[in-house]
Length: 149
Image (cartoon, rainbow, N blue to C red):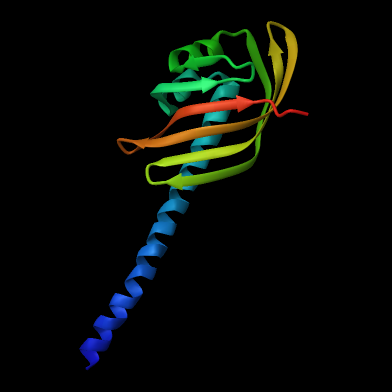
């Protein structure tokens, strides 16, 4: 009788244990991706090409505020050209959704600096898509847009 009760309890509790484990995995993935998002943002601000290169997937694509799109190589060349000096690069209102090996981050973005000596300032919304590729989280797509006022 005791064995039957133990088996019954194990069968009844196993969905809760599995659910708790899945929730912990999602939380761990979300925390990891948020840390990598911050690392990418800092690398962008400093013009750290090596770090950006390691965080962006080979087939990465980004759409920026004016609607232009860049591949990984184009984005890195655009970023590292020296014409842009980033003074402020802040992300707020970050939300992460993890679905298996994919994580989507949305948020608000504020950037201020100079391009070819002329000041600029953006207040955007963004969506970044991260994917766990061969055990490493990398950005596969990014989209920035200026909200309608």
